[in-house]
Image (cartoon, rainbow, N blue to C red; front, side, top):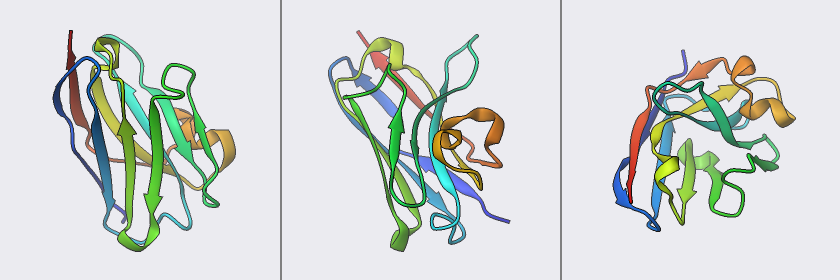
Length: 124
């Protein structure tokens, strides 16, 4: 069974940057589309970035232009580069994989495998 492990979260000041990583135990990035999700306390989990098997990316409006999703198939690793961070970006961040594609890469309903999450806190 494929396992996903996120890392790279932490405390950062507003305007700063972080890069999250999601390492897979198996070779999945060529067969799964992947997404980054976040969940703030009291809120639903939301998809913020997705990358399909062919490398096509999509972003939620709230992060477009600030966050970049990428993957390294050879390293079985997914990344999320987060720049110009805001306090409202504070949340638990999760990576997830789906055998579906296109916009469903960042749709919670279609995710079949999840990581355990990494916490991002942005101070004002």
